[in-house]
Length: 265
Length: 324
Image (cartoon, rainbow over the protein chains, first blue to last red):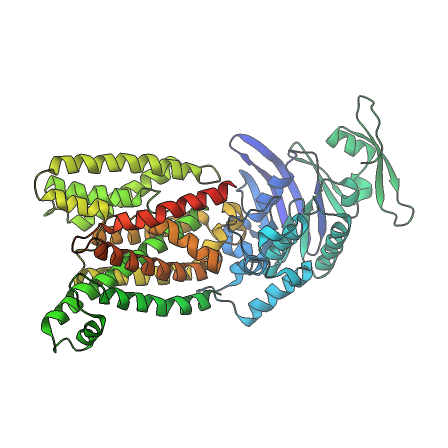
């Protein structure tokens, strides 16, 4: 899916959380949205998913203005996962993931063989096949997050919007997710994820840096994760280096402007 | 799971209705009653008791219980609040106040009592919804429901007071305590399509009701418009409750207790939950009414007292479980 934002502003009441953002995300692209707390990362995802109407500007999905597509049409194309997804009833994993197929179902919402296959594949992709009959309350935090990602995948979307998908996941689960993102992008799915860990974000091919609701920089990690860029957005001094093995950008020696020192991110 | 529970409950429901038909103060032995049921011409009086009194009453009990449980299950599903019910949200109280108001004011020729009940229910729902919305847990709705419910109870009591001493009193008591004593075939004819169509309609929406459990934003991500869906569900839940109040007055606790019991067994998926809750609510009220008829026979207990005696302790048990 091709996502285009044209001078998009959005917010809650009078406060604008997003100001005149221009952004193009191509088909099969993998984009990490970074920035400090309150920079507008979540708002950006909400605007693209149609959950929040922009107060100015236009969002285009595959060339069509988002406002022209019905909520069902948008949900068929985009799978979105909130930062802390809620479920007020204790569904089984299978019941939950079936729910993710809802935008594709025709009246009266019965699952066909094709739908069942998509649900099964979504469970496989996140590695939860064995836990399909377990109730949500019995899952670990990481398993729960994967279950909600499977909800987004079950509709076979062309765009995935994930708010902090890596938060609270252990190292292996983070890596597995990163590899999955690459796989999906390889299949033409556009993946947009917010990310607080800048070294994890550095493994994405393209980054969008937000600060105060504005798009400060957008491009490959080498262009966005610079001393000056990070200082401007986060107010933190960093040292930028390259990983000798992978060539990936690495940030070290985070320091507050007041001069206190600490190692690591 | 859903189909299995349904197939298990269905014969139980039919058996319950038949069982309730065999019970009664007329002292007809079960064997004779069965014979009279299938050959009413052989013993006209017994045939009359069974066909025109007991059978419509048992079926109506079932339908009222089904309507209330269905309505309660939908309310709990749409408000994400396990304590929501027609009773808690003031719908039943509004219907009773509406009916009592029409009777007490003596304007039933202008506004028929059922219409009064329905209007009362709508006013109560809208008031509770407007006053109590906002917040994520639905606690506001429960509190608004308690407040509006008390107000309506006071109004109904006031009208009872006004009607004291004349025959309107007994009629208003019928609406506030709940009774199936007025069961007849026309009432069965009124309620059965309402419950039937309501169940079918809500069951088809089952997946979308499930989607509401993911929160408003979660539902939107699934292409479901939560506000529109809630309005539609509220309409059906109100209609079902108001219809049940029209034929039997306000019977409490069925709409609160049964969905929980059924959810413990079939799980929270509304496509399984709604049909099972309808059957479960029907079965419960059939037996509650049988008890109400038999315990103090030949006197009859208002069925609302029986359901409250069963439902009250269960409600407390539920509360303790959640507080733990």
